Image (cartoon, rainbow, N blue to C red; front, side):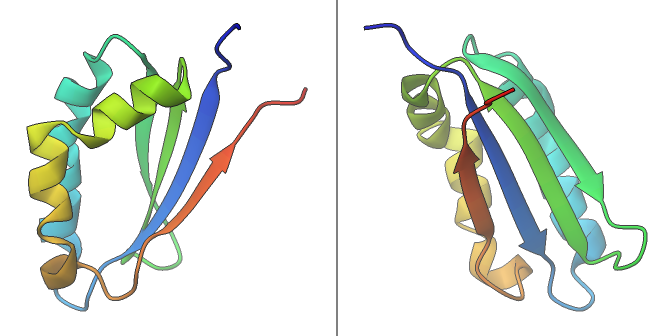
Length: 99
């Protein structure tokens, strides 16, 4: 069975006063994530209208590659800071490309 590419869109909302810290923490994960074999792209965006709102746009070779990414120590460290940095739970959508 062939593996299917997977897109992840994750929207993160920083707590007031934690915007720069959240951005720094995520930026610190970009280079190692992009170096993972299954990562096609991993891009961080910040809203122009709400500077506390960040979106990660990710494409992975397969669900298995994403699952491996989620176990990486640097990502686990970031996830461990979620309560301190995030105003709300992340909105994470797993998607498949259809066109």
